[in-house]
Length: 322
Image 1 (cartoon, rainbow, N blue to C red):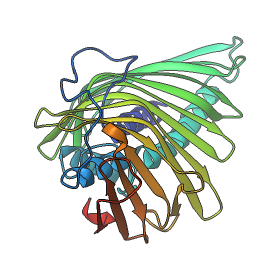
Image 2: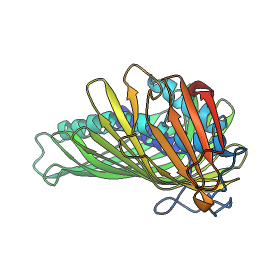
Image 3: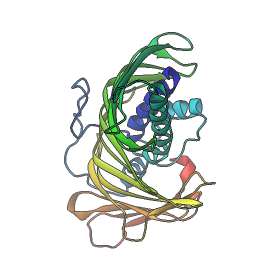
C-alpha cells in the first residue's frame, strides 16, 4: 500500500509540473508568486514560436522544466514528449485505479464504511514520504495527502506536500483533485517549485485535466496556467487532444488557447508527437500564433500579428527541437 500511494503522489507531482505554470487560483500556498507580464501577449514573428511551443508543452521549451519532467518520466518508465499534462494524465489514471483498489482490499472484513491507511516510505537514497489515505466504500470517495521530506529517488528528490481528493467506481477513478503546497523537485542540478491545483476527470474514453498552477524554475522564472484544460479522447490506435484556457509566459504575457473545430491534435499510440491538428494561441489585438502538425516529426507555425486572418510569417520546425 505504501509504495502504491507513493507512486500516486509522484504522478500527481508530475502532472503539476507538466502543466508547467502557475496558479490561476485555488489551493497551494503563497510561497510562489507570479510577477511576470499579466497583459495579453503581443504576438510577433520574433516571439511567436516561443509563445506557441511553450503553450503546447504547457511550459517554456528548453528550460529546467523539461529536464526535471524528463527525469520523472524516465523513473516511471514512460517516454517524454509533447503536451505534458495529457501524457501524465494517463499515468495518473492508472495509478489512481491502483491505489483505490488496494485501499478497498485493505479494508476487506472491517465492518465500517470509511477506512484510513497511513504510513511512511523511505527514499532509495534518503528522506521519507509520509502518506495517509481515507476511502469510503459506500460513497466511493477518497482523500489523503503525502508529505515529502527530502524524499530521494536515484534520479530526483522531492520536498513539500501533496493532498488529493476524488471519487471512484468499480475501482477506477471518476475525478480527482491534486493540491500542491510548495512542492519542490530537484533533478540533475535543476529544480522546480510548484503551487496550485490540478483536477483530472474520466468519462468513458475522455480524460480532462484542468490546471491552475504556479511553477518556478531554477532561474526563478514563474509560469502560470489559468483553467488550462486539455481534453484527450482515446480511440483504438490514437488520441485526439484539444486545448482551452490561458497560459502565462512571464516575458510576454498571456495567450488564450483554443483548438479549431475538427482540428484536435491526433497523436497515434506509436508516436511521440501529433500527426495532424492545430493549436491557436491568441494574444493582444486578436494576434495569433497557430501551431499546425504537418507530420509526426514536423510542424508549421503561422503568425498573424494583427488578427486579420492573414499570416505575417510562416515557419516550419521539428517537434523534437521544441
